[in-house]
Amino acid sequence: MKNQLILLLGVLALGSCSTPKEEASKPKRPNILFIMSDDHAYQAISAYGSELLQTPNIDRLADEGMLFTNACVSNSICAPSRATILTGKHTHINGKIDNLMPFDTTQVTFPQIFQANGYQTAMFGKLHFGNNPKGVDDFMILPGQGYYLNPDFNTPEGDTTIMGYVTDVITDLTLDWLKEDRDEDKPFMMMYMHKAPHRPWWPRADKFAEFTQKQFPEPETLFDDYSNRGTAAKTAEMNLLTHMMYSHDSKIRPELLEEMGDKASPKVEEFENGFYGPYGRATAEQKAQYDPILDKINADFEQNWPNMTEEEKMRWKYQRYMQDYLGCISSVDDNVGRVLDYLDESGLAENTIVVYTSDQGFYLGDHGWFDKRFIYNESFKTPLMVRWPEKIKAGVVENEMVQNLDFAQTLLEAAGINSPSDMQGESLMPLLAGNKEQWDRDAVYYHYYEYPSVHMVKRHYGIVTKEYKLAHFYYDIDEWELYDRLNDPNEMNNVYDDPAYAEVVAELKDKLTELRAKYKDSPELDSIFIEKYKNMQIEKGNDFW
Image (cartoon, rainbow, N blue to C red; front, side):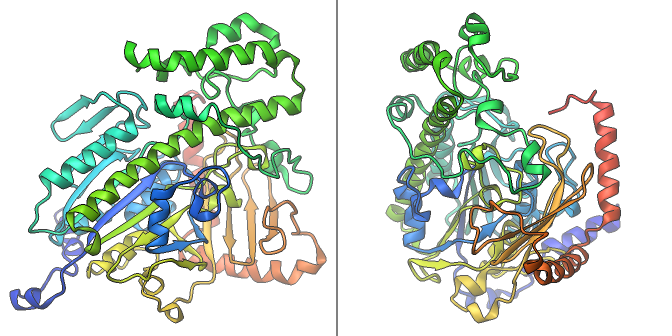
């Protein structure tokens, strides 16, 4: 234990061994504001060409910095993605392969390294695993998923509840810290992390009223039948019509569902307390704002749903989904604007690196789905924008393959801090600085583990380049899929067995084997994780999600 402590202190001290004279000659270190939302699809950001809504404040970061069009994650599910971001390591290394397995708390996180190198650190919002983030001086984090209305927070002083809408509250905490608790003699590294737009998508009451009046364009793959895909797409339980819940998701009151009986079909299994859990957080005053809108939604459902065709029901659920999901994002955008405005007004903007990203992408009716998990584009790709006026040219669009695995090393290098040698990503600084010739990555590695579980997306790993995507689905099936990303951007046709792609398959399989070895992943490790997962199912009675 003593030796482990000495090693940890040595790692944390990397980059900090300088004389006073050397410190005085160094340029001023940048502040860092890391903004992350939860399940924010790139399709719902106007900087990415979204036709669903305008996000003018988030777009400011793209207009004034760099927008990445091929940013992606290494495991598209909440807690594992966050663990990868914090550690700079794939989930099979940091231990957080799914939302169930514990995070390896011996792992060093990048906030610890910033703290050890003289940065003041803070975190406000959603972490999603653990209640005591390491290396963070000041924090107020949501326990687990947290609530949209009047959220609870874990703090160093204990638990507390703050009245209000969660997106506003998290922003208030962030701004209060910047204005009142920031040490002006130190650079800061702050993580400003939204719950929204995570399911169950409860917009603030005014946004709820506004967005339920809107109709949104449908994705061209809304009625996908998966005819040219494998077993995994055909058996996933993420379909809007057959798996999206009436009460939890579409805000239909349980009493009405019970009253309608078979008229509310198809039957969908509901979460216990799926409606009244979130709604029950509201005060009487807040309920008075929500109830007229809920009444209108429920009246429409009662009157029209029984007479709809299956296609009409799918469209109705899609619109309800988008109204709530996009209403949540509109609040995120407003609040990001509040923080960016403060940076401008306070003079902090020029020397502050601002990152905007999400823990992963999300399906917005694409392929008829909601949720994430797959290596397919809508869940695999994630928004990423970086602004740093002193270093990054404004309005640059970058299409290189980058990953959430890279964030820790990027921020550390930007601050002049050496990264631990066991981090597995690559610093994005060459791209951010316009030195693209120094970037040589041509492929990224992906591995999803949480199966069998909610949404029933099968285990798979794969390799993705700008041109192709090769995935192996395993455990209770053994199937390969190949997609031509340039000629089939919606990934509608698995061409793995097409003789014309035989050479591509062979090359990608060789490269995939190399990446598995590079990142210390293997079939043996797959088997170990499967056994651990089975044991956890037995311990938890097969009902743990």
